[in-house]
Image (cartoon, rainbow, N blue to C red; front, side):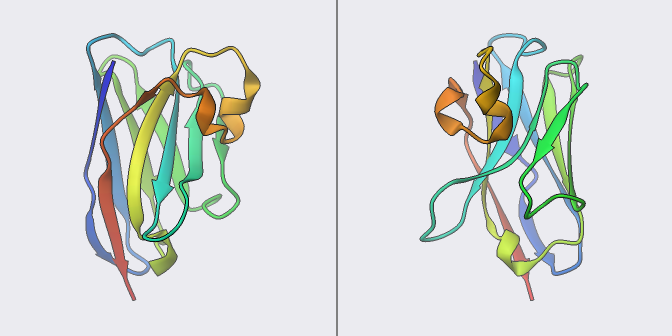
Length: 126
């Protein structure tokens, strides 16, 4: 599975941006999917996750109420809609996929994810 993130860019604080993650090589409709981010000089952190059926979504407290994760299995693509952006949201955003039945991937356990994509840079100016 290859994952390609796109849609990053420069946006002012308070603005919105949607990043996408397109999968190729295999249909990921049965995979759990997640978004992570890494800011300069900081460790990677969990942002959001979604189950294969979109029945359940999970968010880090820092983005809850502002970000929305969704997926279109017909397009083999996962999205992250980011609203009310803050300068502290500035980071490289990565998508990841997992086939694991363990629950911890839903809550940000990055070690569970088998596949990682290239990142897309989101810069929020104040």
